[in-house]
Image (cartoon, helix red, strand yellow):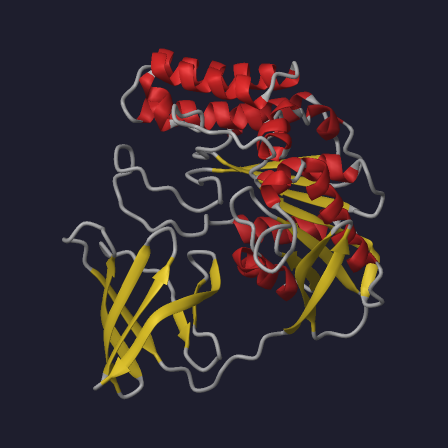
Length: 403
């Protein structure tokens, strides 16, 4: 599109038909609505939006047009595929298992390299809204190809795991992470001195607290963490959204302070009903609040009020980051719209933590994909994996873990 290309592949041999794109950091995402008839093929892939592919099959090639469902009608996206002579054999096997964590059962997959000897090991932790192990197949594939045994799992209450996610506390999520790490630690094929965590967003935020509760992890990799609290992340992201939609800086400040007020009320022991009334009345006075997570017609579930989404707002994490005593890599994008990368980096640097290495990627978003902003960028590009991310992580692993 617009002269910019990305890689893509489809696997029609497997029981579940898959779409993959290294550039988009997607691996084995399900294809839907597949039809093949009279030399024509059609299928769709749901990413952030649904993309519909319509092509013609000619010998061992498929070429056609992709359209974004509900997108601008004048977007011209061409695609071309060439049939591979043989299916590539993955350099790892995948083992499925169920892990017991207190009163829930976690559905997990372990990626094990086919090489002999002891392997490094890593457990991948989720963001707050990407809760399925299938959301992390790209990352599991990446680490497995580096020689790691990798564990991914469906977060409690999500996918095939039991429990209720929104009734869970951060401590519940931390306990699940530790149980998964212990599962890896007890594997005979794992080098117990080279085992750790990788976390994204919420998972990255929780890493230092997790490390304070177990001596198993020997390293941490945190991708786009919030260093202070989830309240500060919500204040930043919602106020940024409000200002980007044309509201004033003062309106943005009101949004941020509204989140902090809600946290203060929760910290002081106010009831779910009192917090709900504050949010509703605040949105009546400031109509732009309806574009935020504290919108006017909100109804707070009495039971969910005791879960991480509300009670987690009062938990701060800076002291845990300050006490990290194992090698830790922290990665940010300078166009992150969910956490304030500049502020978080400043705080981390002020801690003078000799074990923490920080890397900021220009033009990268929260997921460390390239961000395209038509108001400041002169040339279109896809939301592709930011250049240098995987190479930087691999280099850090060799310098800090493979010592």
